[in-house]
Image (tube, rainbow, N blue to C red; front, side, top):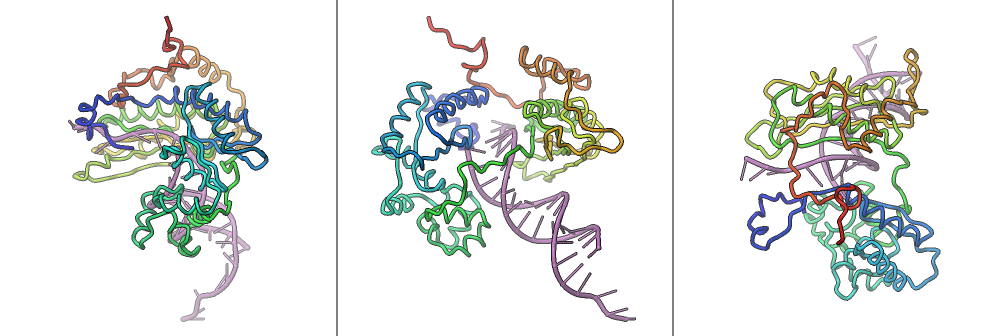
Length: 369
DNA sequence: TCTGGGGTCCTAGGACCC
DNA sequence: TCTGGGGTCCTAGGACCC
């Protein structure tokens, strides 16, 4: 996971490994199909990520194991996607059950952790770093005091958990003990930020090029915001050096501004980008990555009002037209004049080997003869 | 010349997740 | 030579208030 392709070229060649660039339009559509199916089978569920969903089985008096196997078979039959199902008393334990369900030949994709004896065994066979909420740094910290398994982690004193991994870590430890510390759905009610950023294929040291990139990111970010039907009250621009070049000085520069009135209008945001680029630009910097963050998001009707310029617009026919054109003719069919040139941008990362959009693009739908 | 106590808010940085 | 992107949460510390 996360290993650069160039480091494993030999392996790829030797075993004829197929290489695919990520295609989120495809993954998103397949995800939607699976999630819709699952949600229709249960009274209460919460989508956690593109490939995970939590289900509440509390009010379902059934044979959970058999039910899960039937569901798994149904998902495979109707979407073609194989899934794993883990069942337990807390989310953290259910995630562990899920991992083992996929790994164990005997479990065959479905595993229930209910009896304490089996929970203990499962925790003993799970590395501390594989527990949900324990990342690389915490795993290192834990290892330094001799904690390497999930079972050992479960049994550390509350105070130690709190001290080493803050309140989130304490929650994790309690969940390992079977004490529920999270609701079925504890995702925030509303998105708080939208970010569009990219690494460049090679470092940029040209101001116009940086500006072009940021303006294009701004367009994407505003389109996202409009899809969410939100506006931003604050804007941040940032640039970063190449973190892999230890021979060069590292930098990370950013600037922030308040948007008055709050907005999701590409023209407004682009104007701000143009006016503020000087605050992060500096001659001689080798910029590897840049991005735009839209913060303090809220619904247009909740946006703070400015005493002089009035409230934030809720209707924006021009932007609506722009969005419709994108749906019909593809991304960046129409752009602001500031971004007149579709640069065929030489700063873009390549995405060779991308899977076709089998389910979301007319031209890519497979033909069966 | 002496110089408190109790708050909130904001931001940067670091951890985590997928 | 090549090294991802987009999120949330927590904490410490500083600025500010009365």
